[in-house]
Amino acid sequence: MDTEKDINTEKDIVALMELLKMAADQWPRSTTGLVSQSELFRQNQFLLEMWPEACRRTGVGGRDFPAGVLKLWKRGMGRVN
Image 1 (cartoon, rainbow, N blue to C red):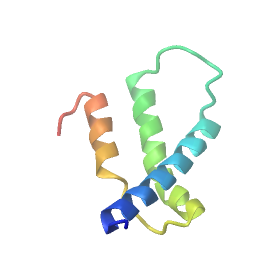
Image 2: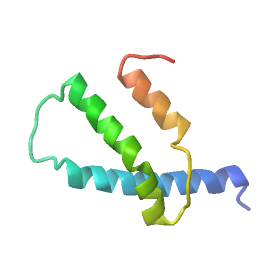
Image 3: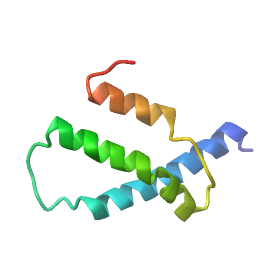
């Protein structure tokens, strides 16, 4: 049987998948090359702002953005905290 943590993780994954679809619509992969640090920051900001919409679209209700994803972003941006 699923624990509450497992159910919450599933809800996060469903909403994250929707968020990735939204990002793909916003930034098609038709161009190749490096993305500047400022562009990466702008894209991450967009994703954070679109999180409530991704949750609404998937019917998972209002959820906090997954802490593990934020930690990975910070690490990718050169911040350890």
